[in-house]
Length: 74
Image (spheres, one colour):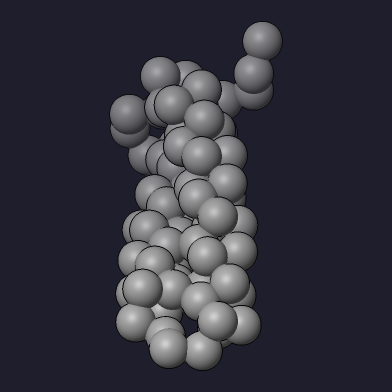
């Protein structure tokens, strides 16, 4: 069984999800807009890397969300 994490830690994961989503979108734009093939490939690779990060974070978020305390800990 997973250890509960704090509500603050859950917020950090949510912030990281938002950041990874933005990075995915920025790299997707680079991959689609670049005329240079090397830049397209880098954009695609980085987009996939950030997709993997997002998926890992989302799994962690979902696993711990139900275990996190709903009230601030004292």
